[in-house]
Image (cartoon, rainbow over all chains, first blue to last red; front, top):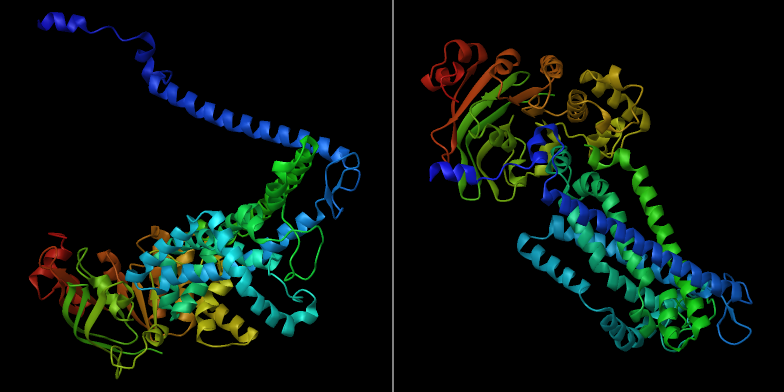
Length: 330
Length: 258
């Protein structure tokens, strides 16, 4: 038996014997390599397909536009004389997202600091959980809440703003339902709060103990520790978190479509109803659009895509420029 | 600018675990006192009780008295932040503020303590960097980040940052354990110069280093793992290394355990 069992072992295939020379490829490696390379190629192919599709349809739309695609304050993409432009949409998207960022980022950083550095441990984890829960609420729910609760309740605040800041033009309010870009901004702020908060909190928790102790040992108070060690270390993280939030704010569709009362006018008074955003405009017009109308909406979507890309690029530049001073080098 | 530290009956805890038990000792002003002992004997914990850094650790707690001349650091109404402003600390791993320039690192403590004129600040930064034997190496790049320096330079930058505020006492927690021998020598020379002006306490794992830099040496030990660390003896360094009065000290120094 003993002798036969040794002869039963098949001889090693030739390539396995050369394992030492580094030429052996085991089947597991080969399969995994194929899978990961395939996924990578598929991703690029899908991206390219989307880009080609968007660009092709956009070119059709823009060349058929009888008015300037970038400056026209109208959206009439049907009939023989289509005239449409993205000026209102770009204005509305950027302004509502900017308002959302101005409100959400300071609040989110404050909550994140409270959870990571001030709250007792018993309070901080449930609080973090509630924040994460906010991120799981579907956007249509936010939209309904915004339309049924925020809109009626904000009129009072807007009248008050109009009384004291109406002279700026930005905060003048002529009454009526508060279905305005500012309301959209407030709603978007609440919607991006969870993502900005939880990313910032993670970054703040990763601040090396030794950086905080360096400040403490110099006689820094808790706020001074945060200012000297935590915020500088977390700066690039806060920027990344804000960009994630901004990405969501720029592309938010249902909540904006539910709250905003759209119009194709650029109204410098942000409290008055009117305006529109890219995503909201696409959502509300797409189902009724004909072939050319869809092309026009796709063209506006391409512009939104480019804006998002530019914003992200700018954020990366900011982070890269601060790299020498970032905590990662230490 | 140097004060005497008088510790009596000091115990420190992590939650319910007692890390060091009933320590009493005196640290003389303008001298270097070294703490030696096996890992886990509580010498670093004890060092951190001297500037109230121990209680920063969650569940860290201290009992007993630490007198800085005639003021009890653990007395009621004493602000730990104020204590840390008078007792400087240098850590095991160099920890300059990575986002700050070399200049701002040294000025960081001053800016916490009050407002200075730009020229005053420049003078103090220059004096502190000279005091830490770092001035000649960095005077042309004060605006570059401190994290770009070598490990030894970073540690001297941290010493400059600590002495810029003219503390009464300078605590050093294994300041050379992350450094190469040449940087270590530079720091040891520096300690010799600094003791003219400051009271220095240094924790070290390196007994040759304790013998080289310190005037007095304290030996800490623990009976078993999980037991609190105790002070076995403190004496003139020469005596500790030649003729200690406790057998355990001699065993440790001659390498029979630990």
